Length: 424
Image (cartoon, rainbow, N blue to C red; front, side, top):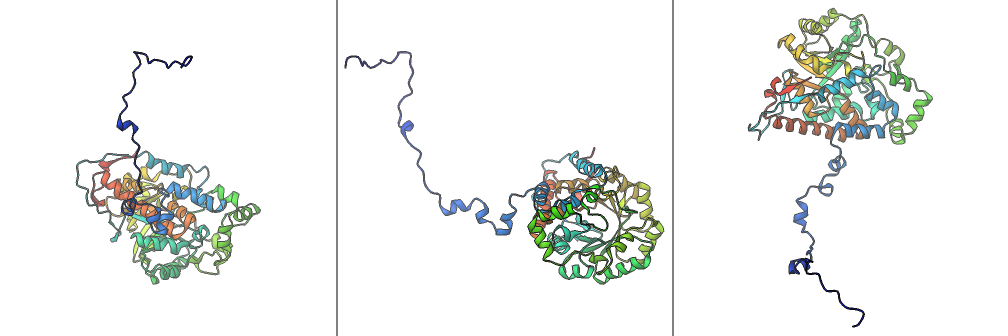
């Protein structure tokens, strides 16, 4: 046809060969049920497990807790003393840890259990005593204690707990329960608390010695969560902003410091909660009164560690109270090896402060701790979702701890040693 001549291909033009493969299309088919079932997913997980499947770290729980809890309540857990330097340094110390793993070791089977004060624990962990626990979520201490039992680890009830000593025992009958005491020169008051703990089969007494007075917790002062609490307009507005939390708080039992006994006047209670006059002589008196295991918590110096050991305690918890007392206090992880060396096996040593993962627990044990105390992490989980969330958190810790042992080339908790870790 004139005017529409077909262009001739250039002799230099290279064209791909026309092949059958180039013209073919991908054949598609629906997968069989058996093939789909090979992949674990939300549709095949129990409802409770699926709820937390995307929560993988303490930081994830922290974000959920902040979203679901009034600011004053979240700040009570999150906050610390003054500039909050101590709490940050405690966490950062674990971030600076360097592991030195063995390779080509048989870690097909790992034994993560240990003994804590002569009793078996599934993991080298203790859930630390915390006050105001039902303020975080009304399930409170019983929920945490039951989770501890399922995880096979002890739980410590605080003197400022919001569940009574005997009620916690009845609601968590399978848990190894410890009781935390603020030592006082009023030995009658202390003896009353000891008797109640003995009657409810608490195995261990944790005496906290770093609170002659309450630390300057500025967030709590701004929010009105002082001792005793004062509800400001700002606090009430913040609580109203979380209607689910508020409904839960208003439709359940009123918050009370049941561990000290129901009906106590809050003003007089907190006026006498901490005693700046206690000494090692009071600790020796306590040792004579309590026949169970005795832990002294709040040691931050070598000479105090030796003095506590001389007073007959069974264990020392190296702790700066989560940074909530004296800001710029010693970082527990950095002090730990020195305390272990100083007491020379005369007492067990625990580490309290900065733990955020199972790998952190492994580092602490490698540096000489018999066990690590866990506080803020389980409170974040409790605020985020109650008992099932605490269950999930403890599973994350257990899985991470076992994985860390395997990656270190270690098959038993007892084989963790200082040559595996450098703390700077």
